[in-house]
Length: 174
Length: 291
Image 1 (cartoon, helix red, strand yellow):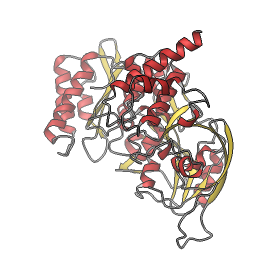
Image 2: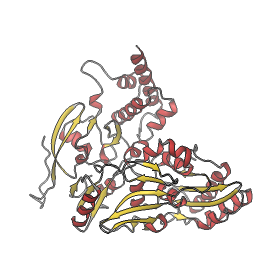
Image 3: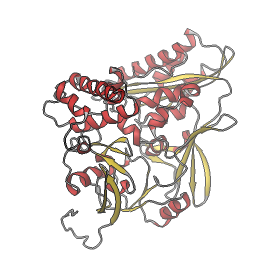
Image 4: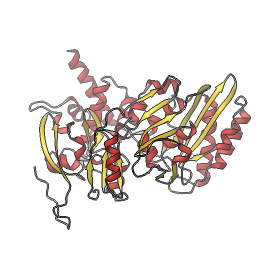
């Protein structure tokens, strides 16, 4: 994994650390500059561009990933901080042959228009459904209140998550 | 956006962290939740030489009650831990009212109460809550440990009395002598926005009489405002419509709001009065979320 920086006048003086982490079940080692943000490690370092950087100011939630199962805004965490931890991104949802119920839900209920916020929405929703398999509409709205969508008005996103919750429950019951 | 270059250390003990702060240079920052520090570094409002990440220090993620009723909140206790805490729901109505209103659910997974106090943003919700409850910050440094009442902890916007080699290790809320009631109300344009107005009220009641009262205001001045005169009129008698109205008026007078894009000064002052009345009129505010 290579991340190239412009060579300013600090040549040889760039603080770099070696970190080990797991992403979507795969073990990785990376040499990262200490100021590298997690979002950029994921997108530019690993090449998983499903995690989007929207506002870059901790507002929009498009960069949401799970770290040890908890939703975090990856633009607001340093890459060095995931040393020894486990990351899940939107790319980890589907299997080779099957969409995750959340992805199916967004398809069935038209939960996206431009799609920019969708990966963050799905990961925030995943954290919710992992903790609470049978959420109310209010629970879904509350859990997604840190994720902005400028297209849908949220109605169909909420429906998509509820659709996924029902599917996951029926799968685990079956 | 990137922060400026910095050296990064992730010590495994507080002693190690403190010695790193001592020898780390002129400008070191402690990183806990990072939900204020990282954005500030990205905007280059903060450009520390050394960042000491305390997330690997064990034993700081607690919130617990001592046998005497004192509540202690460790430096790595996240907002979300407090939001979902049954302990707070049953014993700390003002804190339980505030926890779900901090930032947004994802930020609450990382951000910490103690970090919020150290950040000392005049718009910070926790500072008002801890001030209203008469709480303190426990700081540890090379010269030992000291307990700093919140009223003395913050010296100005984004400034505290912490020495460069001190770490705030926990926040402390003293035990209640009477039955606790109160709450926190926040007016915000949308989830995650800074408070247009926030009001924290913490009461202790014995029998009918209020034995202790604290009122503090968020977002209506250059720093967190302790409305001490407003709180004082409530003490030593039962809550009445009259005493509530007096406290609300005095709290509104204590506010120093400015007109900005979130509202006029007059409107904000009005909301301070309204929130004080609202919290005091329902006694226990634990279940209230947003205004």
